[in-house]
Amino acid sequence: MKRRQDGWVSEYRRQKFLESRKKPFRDFSVNYLGDMDKIKIPSRIAVMLDLDGTIDGIDDEKASAFIRQLDYLREKFQADEGIISISTHHDNACKIKSVLDIMARNLSSTIKIGMSFYYGGTYDYEKQLDLSCGMGFNRDKVETFDCYYVRDTIPTNKWFAIIDDGIDDSIYLKYQNSHPMLVCKPSQNERSVTKNNFMRRATITKGFDGVLELLEEYIEEIKGLSISQILGMQFDMITHLSCFELVEKIRKRDYRFLERYFKEGYADDDDYDDTLGWLLLTNSKGTPSKEELIYLSRIFSFMIGHFEEKKEDKNVQKVLQYQKDLEKLVEGGKD
Image (cartoon, rainbow, N blue to C red; front, side, top):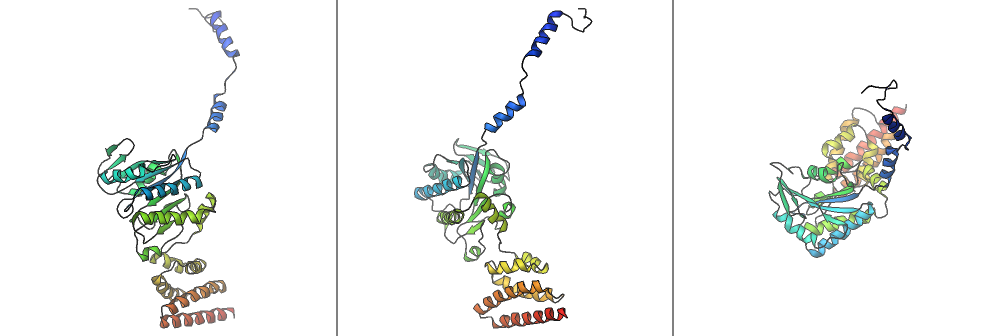
């Protein structure tokens, strides 16, 4: 077909094209973004529950109380739903199902049973589907739970809890400055309880009674706080230090922190002994400033009180003499 000089092969096609150009242009981007504003992205809280040592003693009454606690936390963190997930190193889902049977009888309209995990597979309670995921799956229970229910998920996670009597004490540190969460450890000994802080809580109460106790304690503490204040509490909190961490604080002369550490009761017996020895060593290599001496004096007063209570007179005298020596050094430094 021969083309016209204006490039069109026919007047008919030219007219059709011009007519189509007269139709109003639809700005899909504006409409799409407008629609997106109307879409509410769903949100949830999620709880990971261990089996042995954690879930022991559960019954319908206790499950019902647990669901009520989760519903309160869901409302507190402004989430649409709450998810319960069992995670274990058992190599099958048999015990998971028996526990979830109890939970299922006591669910509210907003608390649901999610995917559960065992060593080597997943268990979907609603579909009664047991799926093998290969050797090594769920070796790290927290990592599996994080992947499914916390990290970059839809619905978005507003808060979560790791409830496990055998979980690592430091697991909460990964989330301290970024995400509201809680670690609960029932069935512990007295020493474990001394390490409690805002994010990591332990109790000597056994099994599921301990779970309910720790959640209730946490709920009471956050009742008057906003979500941003809860994150602020996480960010500012002090935790029990390992020996290495404590020594690093002393070597860096972070006496402001150490004064608060002893004042707020995070130090154990070993911390007092270690601090005394390392303070003697650290300050033998340099004179503290006047400001440092103020914090050191406060630390010394806590140490003296501790050693007096323990009837360790030798250590009391050692602290008093050391304090005098430092004060003389600081006074001498003025001249």
